[in-house]
Amino acid sequence: MDENRTDNSFDPRQRREDPWKQRRGARGAWLAISFVVAALVVTVAIIQGAYHRGSGNVPVLPEPRKISTAPSPAELSSSFREVSKAVKPAVVYIDVVERASLRGQSDLFGFPVPNTPRRLEGAGSGFIVTEDGYILTNNHVVGNANKINVTLADGRKFNAEVIGADPETDIAVIKIDAGGLPIAVLGNSDEVQQGDWVLALGSPFGLQQTLTAGIVSATGRELRESQYNHYIQTDASINPGNSGGPLVDMEGEVVGINTMILTGGSQGNIGIGFAIASNTARDVFKQLVKAGRISRGYLGVKVLDLDEAKAHAVGLEPRAGVWVDEVPDANSPAGPAGIKPKDVITAFNGKTVRAARELTDTVAATPAGETAKIEFIRNGHPESVTVQLVERPKNVAANIQSSDDDEGGTQQGRLGIQGRTLTPELIEQMKLKLKVPSGVFVAAVQPGMPAAEAGLLHGDVIHGFDRVETKTVEELAQAVKSAKPGEYLIEAERNGRTVFVTVALE
Image (tube, rainbow, N blue to C red; front, top):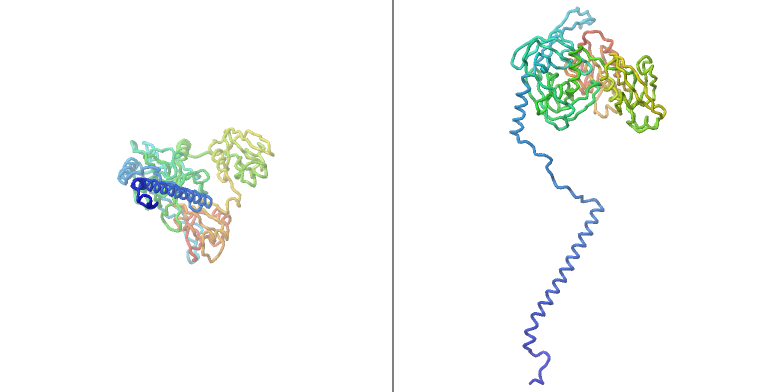
């Protein structure tokens, strides 16, 4: 039998060994397959990563992160209430009475109007800054007042007198005869930052002790309304009657004086308001209380920013100083000192200046009569001179811009508007629909001023003043400047239709 066994016959030892061999073989095969699959996955991932990094189609987004923990609505409301309770007692309502005359005017039939006075009433806000009754407000609120009535938060009424006013910054100080009054504290406006919560208090449309909230939209705004103000822009609701009221931070300190808004063609707030910085108000207050007026230093140069073209012409870097464009008056301090056009002023009394506005502010802050050292570059060589400043003439702008640099813009002081000469580019930019493609575009209207009282709006285009055509801001400025006190007709275009408004000038 043994001799006849074949290789396929059953062997008990083989039956015991085969399962282990089979398991070891299967395990090895699976391990090999796993390694191959893993290698393929890694390879594909590397290739895909390299592709996406090279193509930039799928950027890696950062994980969200919390910048700060916002207060709850209840906490924010509590803060608003506390600030309001602290400041409102010092906020006052200002009611003014003016008198104007109608002179040189005719009625509808061409007969002269008698020279009779008429009563003009206006209102604004202010806030008490000393216990003995000194109050800060806007110049445009009380500047032309014959009588000023002040109503306190507790309802008491007082007559007030103007201690001093500064049209350049639109700040005025008035005083009432009282003592032991609640006060508002002026804070440091230099510490105000974009995004800070602020509260505006005042009497919009005569609604006394109104509180609105918003944030600081921007700081250091430079507007043509004043060459000495760096405004705080806010979206806290400000309307006619808020002028002169305080803009307050969450510490209960006044960081600004609410002064103007952009209307966007409406009569009210659109979320763009401006406040005079409290640090400016503090400096002006001191001078007005001491002397009743502001004295600003005057150098006598027409200056521009040193842009790339001018810098290249004199071999300097942009903003390396301030370009002297002209010395208009040979008898001004700059004239005898030898400062010439094309000089680049780099420092004033040791303080570096990089922009025309910086030089203007620094010179203006220096009292007339003081001596100042001017450092400048001429033909590539640094030089310096010493000058004695004089008082700035009232009819001269210390920081004059050329007509090209100013884009045809000007402020009509008596009217209270910011105007720009109409150009095809401006028409396209503002998407204006006009019958006559020329005139003066009203870029902003100052509350409380004659233009606002007459009903002129942002976006209007002025075509004529007192029956005289006005195609440029220069023509309008000259017409307004030469106008005697009285009422004048302004022809304007609004949304494609002609409107006529009557403006009263003092």
